[in-house]
Image (cartoon, rainbow, N blue to C red; front, side, top):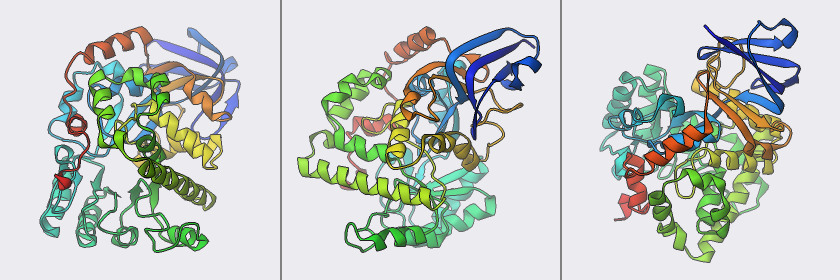
Length: 419
């Protein structure tokens, strides 16, 4: 088997950044990590000025075939899909050439209550027993987690968690009808968007320090997706036309975003979203200071969120919240892999791990904006040819955006419960 040695200035292995290391690739695996002097005799690819890192992991996405190309262009090689049609979406992704396809961890449809907000990627339930049956079915189909959506009550949550525990799978929740405290009491493992975590949600006045204490007392992992709130507030801003990530979004999707109800929201709604973003950023700092798990995800391709590049924006917002760049990168690689249960497979640079790698000019573990300075990406050991990736994306973009999540955009993101 042919081996290649990558020789960067620095290697971030998912935990620490060190100089003087080289990384060997053989097939789809990392074959060597160590000093160049002791490395095998193999062709060398020198990456002067670059930091080599594990591929980034996005823990909250909704994939369609067109999204794959942006993920890879941005160095996102593993994703967790948190609501999709398990009968259609995985099969549709097969039309993406393997070298341009991130590894996808499927959760299946969002499990909702009697009302279903997003019918193309969700499933409703009339009773707690129905909910338990859905969890059982999805577990038998091999999912590693299930997602409970906003119209689920505490009783339904408890039924889902009980069934999930029987199968050893994770329960992710977006509380709405049920409050955050009910989700925690039911035993969910992870909460999305910091839903239900703001002071007003917890019964406090904005700015009351007691609200943060009350939030931290509800112990659960959080995936903040700060970029969602910025994206919903800023959709339509002129800067969107300067965003290079938008080159990886089909024109049909751009049109749907521009015509969504969020694009024409009144100024006071935009400002409220921005105020909520700032409060969420303070909660992220509180989580970090308390040593709690911060799961990193973007919710791409929701409104205005270019796949892959919106994760870069999320990393920047985590930094602006007070998380040091090194810990941001740790969370987006080895930390996310740990939550997925694949810490020896992805999110790390170690011998035997999957050779999903990114070379960044500069060092994003010191300067977080360097996350946008991608030089090269390797997917399962194969270097991605940028021109071929662009050509394959352009061909895909000539097709209708026909993935199950795309239908929500074409409906301009109006929840079915509001029809």
